[in-house]
Image (cartoon, rainbow, N blue to C red; front, top):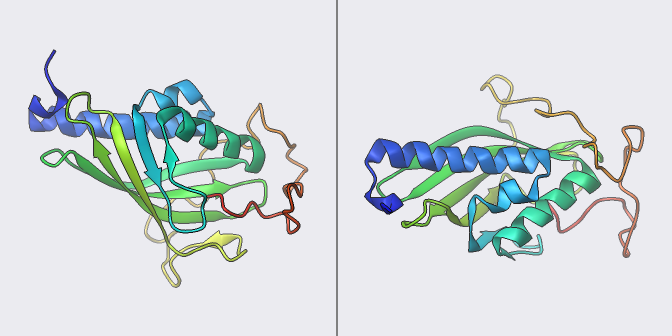
Length: 186
């Protein structure tokens, strides 16, 4: 079998983009198997301070995203995607929609890919700003709509398996979380 790193540049580029888009489709579908299959088993997802990271392992990453779909109505849009086949790295800009509490978060992620399989080995997430309770976390003063960004979630929420209904607009308070905000989570 040919190693991913030995494929021609265009094939690597297309493969890297396909893996990222399949991962995001799996996130939006809350499909653990679909997400996990885009990562090496020992993949790591890093986050800014205070987010309870890193998440280690393909199943941990996938199960944590499914949990956020089911509890806070998470949905994601890829806004920009750039691949660099020569270094087996990519960067994306995304929106994380939080449909249950309302609002969204904008950020970027850097990806590293396994040279043998072309699967994701590492994600490093960077946010526009740390969440301070605002419903919209974005770069201050940047006109996302004018720049062509998605301004509404790309999929219907709540998810069919969600733990809340469309009329339940705020998360329940759990485990000492008294303000209804899911602190420490994306």
